[in-house]
Length: 282
Length: 246
Image 1 (cartoon, rainbow over the protein chains, first blue to last red):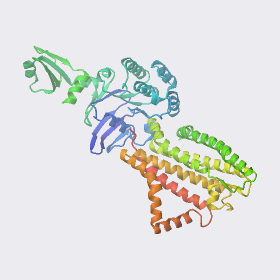
Image 2: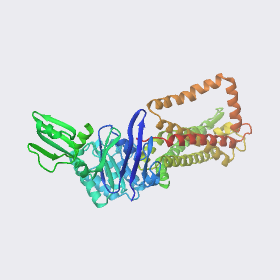
Image 3: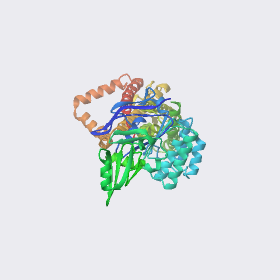
Image 4: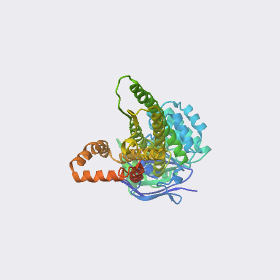
């Protein structure tokens, strides 16, 4: 079983350090959520893995082979970035034809089925599609290529709520019928929280967390109650965020959630978005 | 590589073939018909030559590779092809189109020569103008094909080199390349040649020898052009190696 091993990856653009000594493993047959604030380094990481840009230092291995300029390795990946890289005059129909040519396992029938489901105008030039339809088009190609690792950078950018729901449904169906690894970089954490199995949180070019969603959610909890009680409870605890409204205070704590209830305090598990916001604000 | 060449043939080569077809029609319609008509005008003393249509092929092949490389690189990178694969397949496409254009030039020249048979009005190509219309080598079919191939190849490689530089450069670099290239070729270079005598002499002598004019041998000229192509190709390869696609 081959996994992607990122070891000590750093990338600088001039004086800006986009990635700093990133080390992580992306395993087969999982759905990952790659989460980070704007400018955190998500796209840089994805571009590095997919041979679009070159690391300043460190290495990225697939099994034991470097991913850089390695056609055998890159054949196992498909990356859909925010930028549309198709020629201006190419229509969706032609793009599908070329995808079939370049990726022998590409499921053309499935792609056409999705095109019909999402009502993509296939004779229209790709460049003249709306933002939402460009994203849908890219996602359909990504779901149909049938490679072991698929990377999606902002796969719901510009999509309306209906299309977003359709996309998540299609992704889960595809994943259950023929598992691959999907790495989804997104800002809509609430929407992907129930889809992703593993979470990678990146902050200012560094990996903050890389673990399963469930274990990540167990690392923190929230406490709500009267301000004085909350303050008393929070002594000697790792508080990563506080919200206050009137005399009521909420504290977000990293640590094991207490098993016993505490009088006057409401202790609950943080959802993924809240945990992400508090961790990246801290 | 087979998949890549299929793409290049459908994307670039078919376009080049279409250009040959259109241009051949224009060539016969415009040049040949007018030449024949002019020759046949009674009482008119006509003397001169017609030709030089190879210039259109030179400009076409240059533009093809300046314009298409960046777009092709981005598209093929989307499909996980490496930079090495893309540039190697582009080199093969350059060779294929150069060969096709050189064959087209040869065939068109042969047909035009068959139509225009008048001592006062000749159909000439750049090859015969450069090396002499009576030069046996310049009139040899294989030699002409080789020479044209080399000339088209170097123009294409120059276009490709500019395209790779352009893709690699930042926004200021791109402006520099876009403005600097014509300024360098059409202003700076001629001024330097015209005003610095030793440079003029050096360049003239170099062209005289490397161009095969001393020995009236187009094959030497072709070899020099291919060496230039090799240099341009190597530079393109090196620039392309570190191109970031984002």
